Amino acid sequence: MALAGAEEVKVHSMLENHLYSQQVVEAARRYMDKGIFRSGVAEEAKITQVKLRYLPFWTFPVTSTTTFSGTAGAGLQGEMRQLENTFADKRASKLSKFGNLLKAGASAFLESQQQNQAPRQVSEQFSSNYSWPILARKTDVQDITYYDVPTAKKIPFDMGKIQSDAEFLNTEYRREEAKLKVKAEVENKERGKASGKVDMLQSCNTNITIGDGELVVAPIWFVYYALKGENYTILVDGSEGKILGGGKPLFHM
Image (cartoon, rainbow, N blue to C red; front, side, top):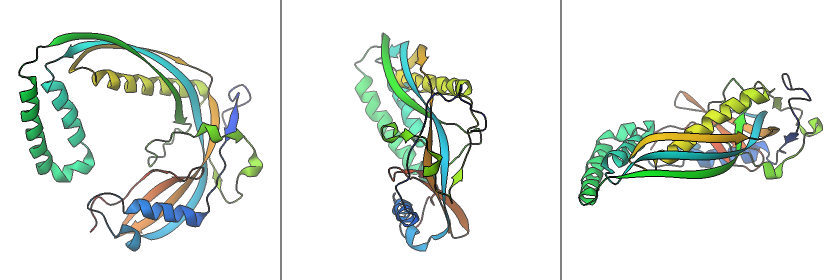
């Protein structure tokens, strides 16, 4: 715990690893072939390394109340904006012509639905409660798309339960630094929720209360593999066996 002393870490917990390397590889291979336009990846992929690392996560109880206003009922602009965001995904870029066709059809449908609707002003408020996790590393692990830390399975931290051949990564975010990052992420999420309730968001204000942070050390398996000259990494949660993210070829038939 390079930066976090007793005052920083009021509660220090961990998740136990329940997987062997072979189980991790099998989970990774199942993930490789998931998705359209992709088959035979697991068969051709060459596993180059399997490494268990213990990563630190701050988790905070968060309560937020968001008040927003906007315009609804003339929703073509808002709905089309959301549709465009969907097709802006990099994975859809190879299918741009197909995506444009879908957008054109959706636009015609939305126009027909909006013909008899008049714009209306909307002012609402909603509240949310989260247990918000954040990787306590300034050096990002890019392959983690999101990790909903299973805090219900945590136990008090015990260095004796860390496998001797595993790599242990220290904390790089202090608690207050992590809180600022959590606040920004929650604000962004709540603004996205508000935007989804109107066609044109005019104002949005979120009041956020963040409780004391808890540091949870989690076992994450890194599966490295090579395919046709390209290198990829898949991350597997050692506590529950879930895939946390990772790379795989866009097309492979």
